[in-house]
Image 1 (cartoon, protein in one colour):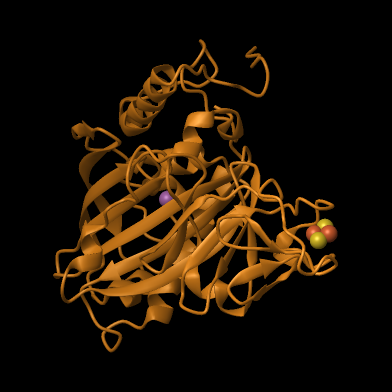
Image 2: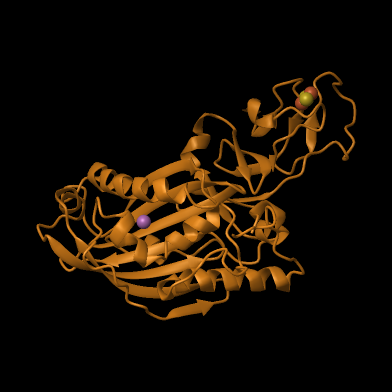
Length: 343
Ligand code: FES
Ligand code: CO
């Protein structure tokens, strides 16, 4: 599925950047191939426009914020949060036609991130229950773009069979590759599934989870928020609970922006945020290496031989099926990069 070619994907909220990035002015982002600019007013209100001035097409993100409006860096035309041009410095006092405007998009702040929906959203910003749980702290982890299709990364987030191999350098238990197949329970815009994964606890992992156990089982409840966000709640035998939020925000067909943060019920004194991040950095680097080697374009309905499956692929297969249904319900067919030729 080529994400930029499926208009219904524009009807979801995506985490695009930490709000703090807007402290020093407007910032550009590319969402589903669409170039957008986001800025913050003096009172913290967010605005999002197409990143293209309607005068001579300059990127508005190269401009600056003045009186809560965005000023184009080329000739100073100024736009408010609705996209209306409110000032043309070369024509003071003259009326400005309402046609002189730039398209605007829905934007909101939640969990410390900026969320954008390009078209009328079908569902809310994912509800992260851990955000409201008392006794949990939030550790922001990663904000970086990866050359991986968003769906490929999402599937991997529910593929428990990869742990024993991809993560054998950090916590995977190569001697226990079998995966428990548990039910995938769909809801309107996603699903919930659980598993228990045997892991080996390296010295680095011990540091990150605050235990001296060398072998352990991780009990996991994973939630998929269609199309490209997931929450992964992990319970450890010694009482630690952590919920990892991973958004694979689709920038274009081959690239996603990873926004990842974690909630934990321990304290900075027990395990420092730096140690938490260092361990997850090592783990995600393992995922990144393998995932960048996979085709970015994930097929929703596989033609014979394009990709083979095994039972533990079930969450990903349900994901493909639900996305296929979504396209169909909105009168769209799956767009692929090319005829896939399998020998
Ligand atoms: Fe923006 Fe001229 S291109 S003001
Ligand atoms: Co992984």
